[in-house]
Length: 534
Image: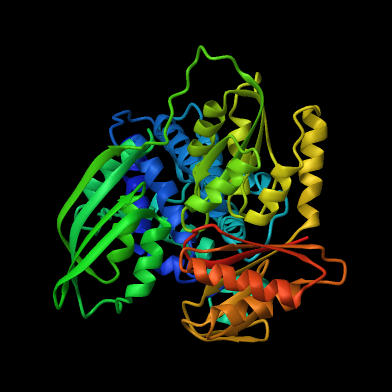
């Protein structure tokens, strides 16, 4: 084959999206850290699904129209660093095809080369041994190996052969990957995408494997407009699949929704109901354990969603914060946050979510607190898409404690530059930590981690792993509190009882008499404790 038409390219993109959808749990499992929120595969899956949805009904046969529309869908649906980088790869890919009706092998090489350039430009400090390395090495080899006479099939074989080889080399570039014994998850996701494209090229189009996918896709279209969903179905467990652990399912489900109810109908069947903004995420997660029966997904208008009155006067300033958990939402509102974007680990907001939040804020100056290192890129991309009459800026908070402290230093009497600089400077004044449970046995950076034990993490460093969550908290605090510390804020998760919150406050106040200790309920899932030390 010498050329690719627009409709073939469309088929290749959708096949790539489906292939990633079918394999994203495997990509999630490559997460280096044994925390219950490895989400690279999910982020890339949701990003690609957004692109595939954008082109699903496009009948144009010129490659540029298809590539441009696919790129636009990816960009607006991009989630997490891996999703944003993926969107930039195909943004550059589309740009290289401007004005073209068909793709030759040479055009393909130039398109992936431009995709590599665009992805590197999007990252302030590129890290090798990641998705960036794979697209760079694969595109460079294709460009220097192929020529005008190389067929499309041969070009893709060259590209994929080098991409797979590059993926295998990622542990040599990132020592932590080698220590844990995995390849880079984002790089694995990119290889999965390229494999899906090649399959369609060779006439072996990849279909989605999940039952009930059509109804999920139809309903998820309404989620972008602020709808909550009532999800009701039976899970029929399959002994040949992964072992179902009730505690892990409950933590995951409550991380993505509320009003969870489930009951065992038979030995192998569970009835599950949940209100969630992400029904597709819930179903995709549970697919690991069995099959579904009688899926019902009904829209419920989200009570907190407010329509923007275009005629209302614009405010001077507004703060947007990413938060998860009713208690955390309340804490952010108490310190002056105007708009909450639901999200966090395993539930990274998309670029579109941030664009919508900026519009909802209806202010001349907007400050965004991502509160997660994997969300900063998406927030930055959203700011670049806003009209010039709104000055939207990202204060690069990487944790909930950083976001709370940053919001507190905002001053309505200061100008936009002073506020931005002060909010950004405040991030350095807090040390952050978390307590959560381990999802697998591993050894990392000198610490032995036991599955289902509780880990204390400072930033991305595991400092303790013990059987008791309260012991993990005390060990973490012993490492985080320094001689100059004056204030400790502890936000308790939904698994901590009110009586336990009071006991933690009493015990820590007695142990650290010269430090102000504040213990509050955040009702966040997955993380038993979120800690900020100032």
